[in-house]
Image (tube, rainbow, N blue to C red; front, side, top):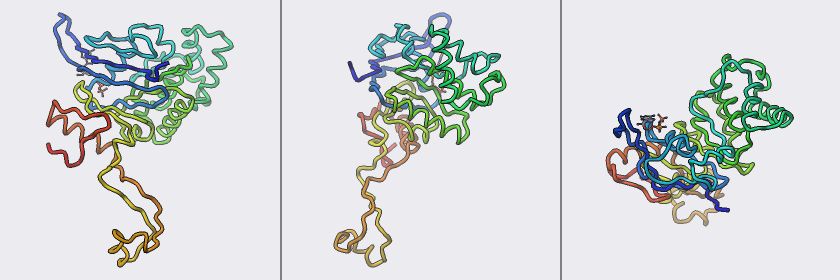
Amino acid sequence: MSDSVIEIRNLSKVYRDFWGRAKVRALNSLSLDVKRGEVFGLLGPNGSGKTTTLKLLLGLLFPTEGQVRILGEPAHDVEKNERIGYLPEESYLYRFLNADETLDFYGKLFKMTKAERRERRDALIKRVGLEHARRRQLKEYSKGMTRRIGLAQALINDPELVLLDEPTSGLDPLGTADMKEMIRELKNEGKTVVMCSHLLADVQDVCDRIAILFRGELKVIGSVQELLEAKEETQLVTSSLDDATIREVESVLEKHGANLKSFSHPTSTLEELFLRTVKESEARPGRRFEPGERPSATTES
Ligand SMILES: Nc1ncnc2c1ncn2[C@@H]1O[C@H](COP(=O)(O)OP(=O)(O)OP(=O)(O)O)[C@@H](O)[C@H]1O
């Protein structure tokens, strides 16, 4: 079995107007892979093509050029969607159903038996922390509760791959922490997660790898650790040193018996990386960084 759950090759999407005239090139020759079991973050400013990518993966849109294979099948094969969970940016759940009825409804769509539906529904409601509100109509739900039931719905079919569009948007810090924990749990269960988000700190916390899109083009891709680690610098953390020792420390650290508590490359934040990528992409539209390469703070613009 290939360890790539998603294989995107030279994918382009041009939206056309009513008369078939090209209106927007939302994606331009995108190629990337998502590996089994990783949490992958798709980032980019508004309108950079993130949602378009997710919809192409689900086969909800047809590509203008290029190929997408997902779970070993072509993206237009809708049967593979039975193995995928999708949390859209905007919830499209029925407002007059309660949480129990909602999950029961989606369980029926996946042809689950009554007993399976009940078991799955109870487990998911517990998992997303909605036990107190399971019999309230969704129209009464807060934004955070709506995100939670949306996630439960996305997981009803116990999917191998979960696509999350802005999973933490509108959540308070507690809700965000819960959502991040739930994403980590999905990873621990061996599931693959792809998430789009503008909330960079959240992405930094949960994603193994990220890609940054800019106007439909891939600009940066790599592991979060690799992209944020400043290899050209070294950071030492020691026990408190007196001034004299500090002056000598570069040459004689070991001789002075300092207690070296950590030894690492300092990391920047995903926010810095994101802003530098956008700035560099605006200044030099043709510039594309190699996998794992990143625009440095000193990149000229
Ligand atoms: N149905 C559509 N018809 C025409 N243009 C569209 C359509 N959907 C998206 N677009 C355009 O395609 C581009 C990419 O949009 P997309 O929604 O994929 O971006 P995004 O990165 O998800 O943005 P956001 O962060 O705002 O959600 C934008 O210029 C958008 O206006």
